[in-house]
Amino acid sequence: MHSVTCPDVRELIDLLQQSNPCAKTPSALLDHIAACLVCRGALLLFMAHLLQASPSPLKTTCAECQHDLAAYIDEESQASFISAYKAYPHVWWHLWTCADCAQTYQLVSTIRDAEQNGDLVPLHCFPDADKAREVGAIKP
Image 1 (cartoon, rainbow, N blue to C red):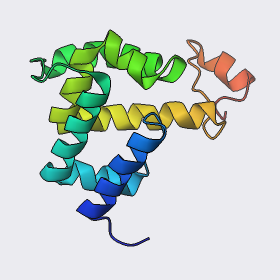
Image 2 (image 1 turned 45 degrees about the vertical axis):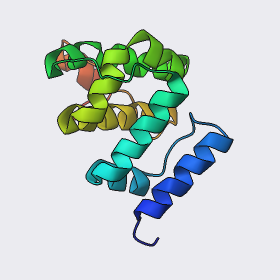
Image 3 (image 1 turned 180 degrees about the vertical axis):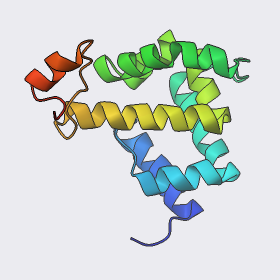
């Protein structure tokens, strides 16, 4: 794949306006958007317009974002991106402005998607090591 540029992101925004704004975005585009302030701002303004969001971001700490992040991801997965935004607007805004929380969001979403696709077997907790060996979760 060629190196992603700002015109590629503008093309993505045009496609989002014409079709499904909730579709998955290719990771190369996400990487470019994360590194390019111009594209990040353009996409933020587009999404804020699409969601009819308040023009000023809500002030949210990383702790507040992390507290609601799992619920935001669950809402996004079970209902829709728009539903997650409406239920947790402070998380949505914070993910645009905090690289650390955005990375946590991406990692958790990737793990969730892998579990849902059957690519990752859910981890089970066994309080008793003998029981874990019995079911084959760990080797003797």
